[in-house]
Length: 276
Image (cartoon, rainbow, N blue to C red; front, top):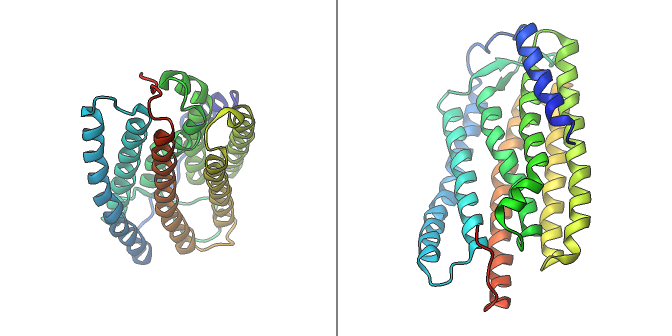
């Protein structure tokens, strides 16, 4: 996995320098704009809860013994919901930076705004998913250990998006397949990571379930991405799947994080938390 990050980065730079990007998508698909509007509206409820998280964050910071693990995850949760609210709002208002997808046989858009948002969202989700297994360690140590997965997942978004808009089919499919293989490498590394840290973490079953849900969802994302490019799924179906699972997955993950850390902190009362 350490090789896939520079491989994807160099391939994207080379493709931008030497290959032509396809045209912008003309017009707009009203049915997909409705999906994005529904996703934005659906995020209003979680965003209202984020205000409660923000108040919880302030109270926790002002407490005599702040729980630093809970503070970290509250900040991360606020960030990921703000990212999703931002790009779904832009998409619903017609600022999707839609290019014509060159890998599909039909005429369909691929939204640059989505991939720009996923550049921030995907590594954040990876961090949210794996940080609990190292929650006994300092944050800086966790970031150093997870950096290869975070960097590879970020460049995965670039390669997957760029591969769909290049005119040249060989280079386009090379980037698409490289992105998918790179993410499979991330999954393999995460399996090794889980095997290393889950025996020593608290509440291993609950944390293992959370990781399992994330891996299943990300494998499904990759399959839907490929099925859409191969023409087995309509553009509307692809965007509907992404939007529904995007919101549901992050809401479930954030809830699980608060659940097992609050329960665990009760059990650990009196034991100092790591500071960063």
